[in-house]
Amino acid sequence: MDTQALSTAGQAAALFDFPGPVTAMEPYGEGHINDTYRLGVRAGEGETRRFILQRLNTQVFKDPKGLMDNVTAVTRYLEKAMGGEGAPHGGQAEILRVIPTKAGENHLTLPNGEVWRAYNFIEGGVSFQTADDPRLIAASAHAFGRFARLLDGFPAESLHETIPKFHDTRSRLADFEKALAADCHGRAAACRPEIEFVQAHAQDCAMLMNLLEAGELPARVTHNDTKLNNVLINPETMHGVCVIDLDTVMPGLIHNDFGDAIRTCASTAAEDEQDLNKVRFDFEKYRLYAESYLAEVGGILRPKEREMLPWGARLMTLECGMRFLTDHLQGDVYFKIHRPGHNLDRARTQFRLVTGMVDAWAELCRL
Image 1 (tube, one colour):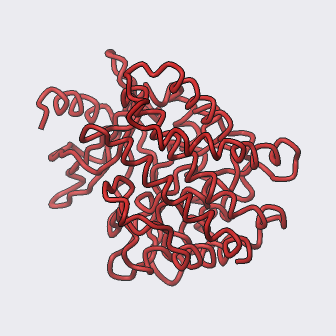
Image 2 (cartoon, rainbow, N blue to C red):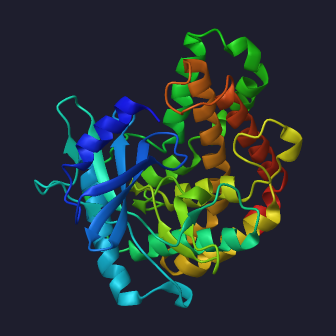
């Protein structure tokens, strides 16, 4: 463990309004962006409670106040909405709760400029990386569908757009084209097939955003990062316990949330699988997710929203692949990597999934 990082985390932890002194701290999770620690706090005689402490990556999240204001507003709204509905499936349901600083703020900025925040630790939930069990797919779909439904009455326009054009696929295409033109690390020659794949699908990128701007699709409160591992699932009941990682909660299209979930849940391999022979789009997983998601959220959707859901899956997978490829061309400045070419491997899996969706397109639209 990095001693200096641990020391800084300890300084930050001391400034949050926990119910007692911090007695344990360890790195936690597998996130690509922020640095996360799990804390043990002595809350009373013989009682230890656990919390999450995170250092925000301010290179990615340049408006930490706006981000934390979004998270605070949404979690408070969810807490009230869930209080009136109870836990789904007769099981456990939790939400993230922002732990204030001792000064009453929803985040902390240290003198060195680092930004920290703290949450309750969600007990009884596990983060799964791959959808090896169909019950995980259903649990994730129900959790994210319920998240969207409970927030149907929240005024999306009141939220900050903390990462401008985050899921504007046209903008992501423009970023890719700039990175390709610059080729500042000389990597383009080694990934020509991936570059050509993006160029072949460039005409699709404006599809959903054009409909949003024309008023045919509504902006909603969206999570914008609905990977399987952003739902904590009870491994005994296989029910969703809590939707986590709310950093990208913003106004957006529900298709983004549906699509980002499909690209992870309907894949037969990990996001960074190097053997593409293991990667394919699984239509039955798509069917299971879509049916479970619509069971929760279908009642709030407009007909055009429902009709365009397959495009959400296709474009979010393409967009994510473009983002990985763009980061590879730029020298891996956004996503954490653990080996050379890691982002290129990630891009290749996404493009393989897009190909599978295109091959099954008639069935996706029929369903």
